[in-house]
Length: 619
Image (cartoon, rainbow, N blue to C red; front, side, top):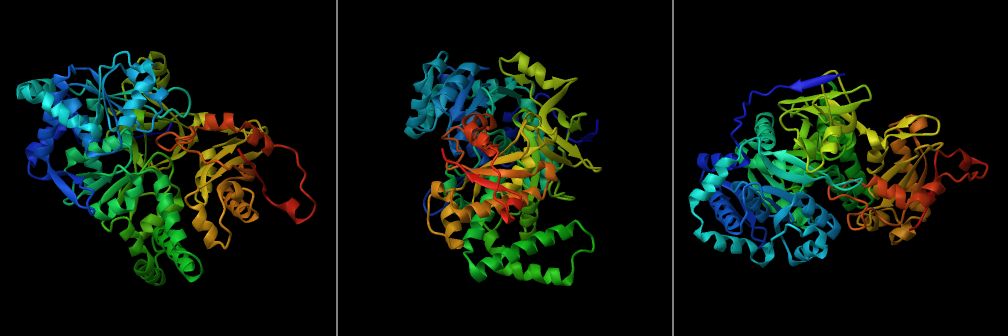
């Protein structure tokens, strides 16, 4: 079993909790800015010092005590990423409570399950609509005593309620929590089955955060370090970064509406961000689309090629020539500088996780001056378990084991993890907990391989490996990630388990479609019409052929079926972290999948020699 470990010089005090990290920040730099709050007026941001934030946390914590929250009680937060999320998060910890994040897009059934399974006593929600969702399914209300609505003055109400609670009570409660105590129960997105509650301790966060400061200090601990959080704070990745910034000295901003993300980036000017690969794909595709056609489009594509070539040259000593440096300088002035300006003009680093980014995009962004550090982790590992270092960075990998972490792969290629950041178990589910561990190692369910230097490459999930009728094992992630690189492609699900060949279901990106059609001289049409249009079909065929370049002939996509409905959270085919619910897709689109394998002999001639026979389908 290949095994790698990254030691850490950090010694974690077992008495520390997440509240300790905030207290130390406030003591170290009380007048320094910890958070900047958007005023919503012309893109201005108001600074909140560490001392002020700590005082507001204490005031809200007093309100929680007044509302009857006891040590060990579970309190839910259901809200978009905003200042109040972080405020309530630390306030619950300050009183010895356990935070239960709920995605603000969750259905009534999902909310009811989480509140019931976690035994939630109090819920803090953002809007009246969220409160209505909480009350819609009574099965989750057994232990729920109260629901507070942020937009209806819920935070101010807590502060008023707690006015009579003495400071000493908050200090006493805060001191009770140690590293071994439960800090949060985060329910997995649930690509299959009911979400499981992942129990993370204060020690999980503290050890990972302190190790993160040691490993990522050049990003989060330098003067001027600042990040804009726009991923859901219900997601462990954003939550980890939030706590990391509190401990490291970085400044945090919150962006609740991703529709305003470009404007928020320009106004806040972060030095680093975290995002899922889909965000980086969207930025690239939007930039290409805005280039239009003709000379401007040719210029963009040339500049993108120069960026990728320049980045690849970094990994090949002696590959950088005078000509390439001159091209990079010209491309930087004409294109790359403008792209960096769109991202705020100050962005130097990005941390990508949740799915493979792909080498093309990794090299592109490094080539324009933005270093994307791809990492890998799960809710069960409190977020990162491997991450690329700034140097030497290996594009296309998810880096080396994080500080203090052990990672190995078993005989089947499954990734196993051990370390102080690994969760203690699934809430109320001892059977699932026992199944998740083998000899003290957490079984991730993901498949990967190390290179000689200990850099990990993710190749798929063990439960998603496709075995064709011919016995060929195919990891769909490689094909899907490549396929999604096309601007008009939204989602791809590769199929073929027990079938004679590999096929794929493809959905179209409705947001990108109008601009893409116009730039290719095609008439305006909706997704249903585009799915059967010969020009769109031809483009999808070429995208599939490019994806096939990454695999063998036996693993290549032979047929594609274009769907007229995209996969979204709203229709139940995407999780809040933008992962496809493969089981739901395979179930609900069984007829479309079956149609891929209908024996239709193509006409004789050149068409019979085509690699793909593309079919379109409607739902």
